[in-house]
Image (cartoon, rainbow, N blue to C red; front, side, top):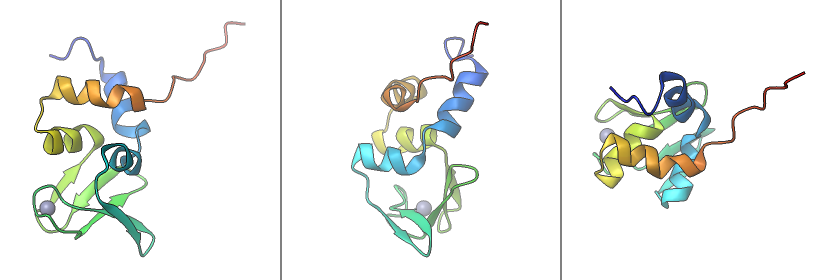
Length: 101
Ligand SMILES: [Zn+2]
């Protein structure tokens, strides 16, 4: 399928690129309320949302949609999967260095 992006790499995109960071970089409206980061749902245009810091998923309680960073970029940029990965790549932290002792 996505042979250029092995499964483990995709997991890093979903888990290590924090959604609030994605909001910042894209200038997407968000705010912290009651200890949760809330963002404007790209579908509902409402703040009836929360980011779960444990799963790094943004949940909209209105349309009941979950957004991981890749889903979110696809939605707001109206782009495809490959383009979303390209947008997000600069946000990926460098992989942990494996010592070669
Ligand atoms: Zn929504």
